[in-house]
Length: 439
Image 1 (cartoon, helix red, strand yellow):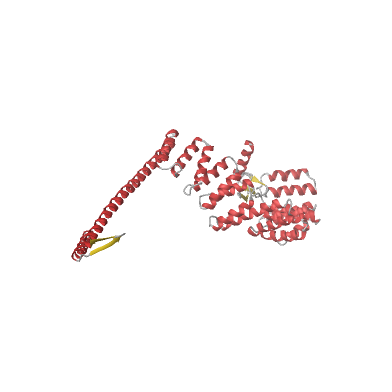
Image 2 (tube, one colour):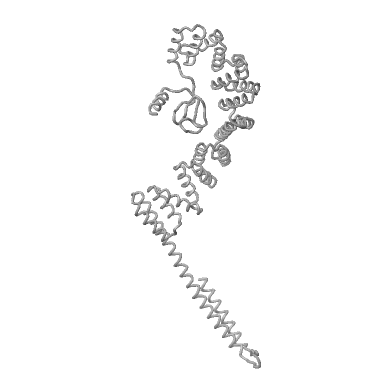
């Protein structure tokens, strides 16, 4: 309705202007070379009016034609998209039905209706080549994927998995890191990168990706500290072979992140012994034992005593101090046995000889009887009794349940940071025996 009124107003204005010009016409003269031409203004106005009307109709025809062609192209594009999506769905159904020939036929339709390098075409081809195990063709598809923003992450992930399958951990990490940098929140990408790092012993990369993961709040503070400390610990072990001064710096960093952790403490003392810094090692062990009197440290204390040429019992008494827990007693007993102070060892061990003493207590009593009296009957009696005693704590992998005497960042079962210090159960013992029989 408004449009109609606008047109009416425009017509009235044109008629008004035309009427005014016709009533007030005048002669228009112009010279061309030597000739002077005169014409009424009415004819000039009519000519201009006809020219404008002609231009108006030409423009109207042009824009209407252009709109129709544009509308046709848009509709055609929409139809092609619909047909391409239908072909993709049919192709995925064909894959589910293991009809790979039909899937590739549908992929050709996708190329026809969409594009050779459309995301749907690349995705469908990757699924076909994956189930057909055509890994070379699959790699080419993944390489095409990383050229486009929409499929970039799929391409990185696909190439990472391909190189993992072929155990090419170097290239697997390269593409895994690109995927992590592009989208660090992809499920388990951090864990996957950690596992690759473990395979390649690239501990510097563990530091880098752990920092990134923590800054993005992908991992909590506890895991952040543990994984960084492990990286420092492993670097320290490598440096220990050639640069003990640097090794000390790295192991100190690991201890700051995971204070009084016995495996780190052991390595630190070992390096101090190599550097002949016996007094520093002695004071450190005393401090560590106060907060964590871990039985794993006993062998390190004995080693320090031998290298510093100090009596084992004297050093043990200094380290234990006023501590009277079970591990402290056991350390003093073993030190007394090594110094052949049998009565002292026996008297200290009496505190642990309850109704059902632990296996280690019984075996120590057998050693005392052997060293003091060499009584075969008593030695045998304590040895037999040890078979019924509870086992000491040991490092056990949470995943494989395999046991090991020393802590390692990767368990013997191949799992990273999976060891826990606990008493083995009968179920674990049976499982370990079965695994050994299988091997």
